Length: 96
Image 1 (cartoon, rainbow, N blue to C red):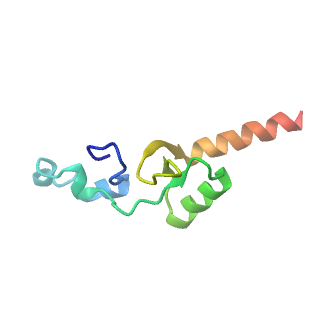
Image 2: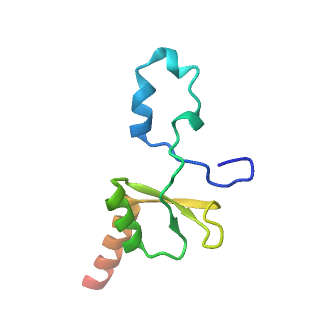
């Protein structure tokens, strides 16, 4: 997030791989140098199916959650495993 608390970018493990084994780069590389600035997000009002669709389309396992009226205002992160766990809980709740 930037100084106003707005989403400025995201760093994935994939982004980090390029510098993990480069000792000379570790000391001079900053987060902003590696961050993806065109971030795919999900708003608080979007359903979990749509979040999973976005994850699948982009090949990611988590998405920043933002406000509807300010798509740069970060309110959280949703992980694919959390969506699957919620789905499993709901499915089991109705099977008994």
